[in-house]
Image (cartoon, rainbow, N blue to C red; front, side, top):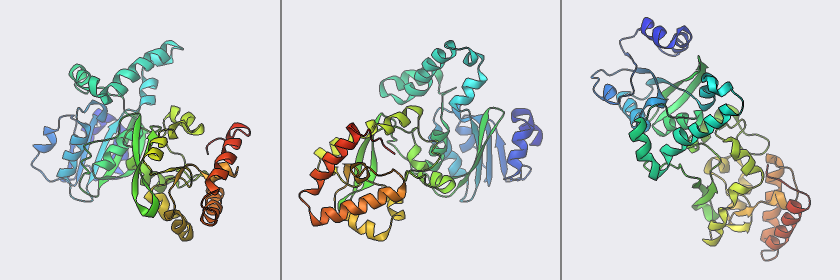
Length: 344
């Protein structure tokens, strides 16, 4: 096994694997394949599975991960690898040519990254490529693993490939409708604790929603109240968030009566658990809104300032239910246009 791994992946990869598993154990299954049947047709019951082939070349990634999951008991380890978009740019010589490299990778991004996610082009793409050499982001691969019942233990870049160590903790989610498109719905807490689907333009990689807990576990919250060092965010997503472009589809929720124009931010169940109890109770009495109080009050975007602004707004809203939103709306408009207030 040692010679196989070193020959295929190198000594550094072997040393990395050895930190987490006993490679020479009879319960460790090491192979190099993108064919799901090599998993399903194996009659052994391993406690560790190592695949030396790139996830980028697997036709049905989730089905492959689900097959690995089915072969492991809870606590079993799966080790695999993938090539990120940035690693591919560094690997290919054309990426080092100014302008030409940028143009080439723009077309490759459209073909190998976007095409597999568009309904009309998906079949043509896989017919031509059979799923090989797909462009994958770190967030998507790790998110798919979590979706398929694994917990991320570690990952490390070795010789241009990102190797991951994942532990099976449950059965797969079997998400039949993953969010790929530019517009998607986020589960958020509404009035009286009702879970609503808040529309938003995509600023994160596909399957990023499955990594929310993992990102908080390793990085915690930033001052803005959002996860710190969040690699799930796309480069263009940062721009969209700064100018609230990604939140424009929330007007659909306003028309549906789930949100107001002004109000506390619609937040996830995970974030809701971390805010003070008194603020939780106040929040549940009112609909969330598109324009948050900290913008109207021209406060900083850190957690403390945002929560204090929300508390002040909710107390005032309770006392003056008919005039508060109008007052906050025009204050926010003034701060955005005249004072150039931007999103945290």
